[in-house]
Length: 180
Image (cartoon, rainbow, N blue to C red; front, side, top):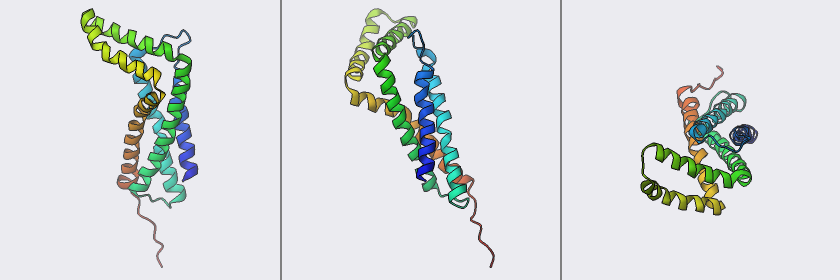
């Protein structure tokens, strides 16, 4: 099981973590409008490896049978490995482009509020807590790492549950018992 979860966890982590660098614009201008969409799509694609990990374990090591709990555990381990790689990749990306990211994100948010017709006073009042949070994010690596982890982990958790349901309950095969 270790080899399977390591292999598929690393693959999933490289897909999600690599997206920071693949999607990184050469001019430094980040696409915030579509960035979240691309990010979550890449997470779903990456976590599809959980289905393959559970199926491979079931077919190769468990005689075609797997229980919900074991299938969920495999998915959870893949999720944890991929999430840690994602967090490390984000931290590397952030150290290189972090200052620009925070400033660009706040400017994007300000621009979107302005487009919705909010006054400068309303924008300033709405952004004040966000600016405070972004300063904490910028200056406290533990907070930054925790927030980054919570971006990806729930996606993997949901796909782990779906995989466990699929292989552990819905597509449950009965163990072949040789007739004596």
